[in-house]
Amino acid sequence: WFESVQTKDPVFKKVFDEIDGGLSAWEERDRWDPIWMAGVRDEAPTTLFDMIIAGDIPAAIVKEDDKIMAFKDINPAAPAHIIVIPKDRMGLTNIRKASPEHIEILGRLMVAAGEIANDTELGFGDGARIVVNDGPDGGQEVMHLHVHVLGGRSMTWPPG
Image (cartoon, rainbow, N blue to C red; front, side, top):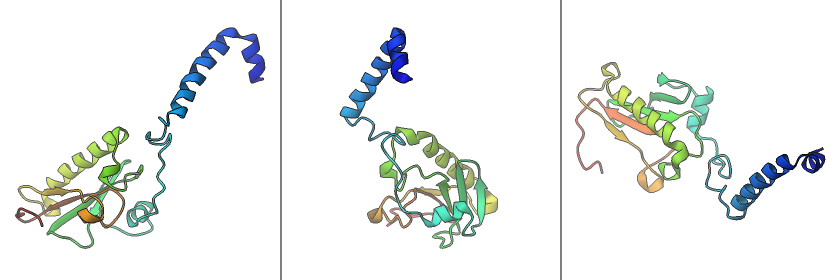
């Protein structure tokens, strides 16, 4: 069928050849590889956060929408300690994996962190520390990008 359409319809053949040529050139130069869901796939193992999102592990959820979830840290480093995560990890095991395709979710995480830091009912006062630990050397324990919102006390610098 496809070959007969190309033979009978010269306009279709011309458009197909142009598109196919462009796609083939991308393929030859490995241009697909760095594009999320074109070449890049999330092949990292399931994490504790994935199990919380799935409802397999309980959590004290304080904020949730279709893209993010925020819950109380079970091992808090401050009187108020909330973790904000993307529901779809999208390959973001850590911040070094971020690419232009992640701009929207990274923005949502920051906006959610700011809203949480304003919530006095969660124990936040006049400010908070927003932290993203990145990789083992950065203190990251769960390989699913997450934002810590810490507050309820004055923070010191440097954090250590």
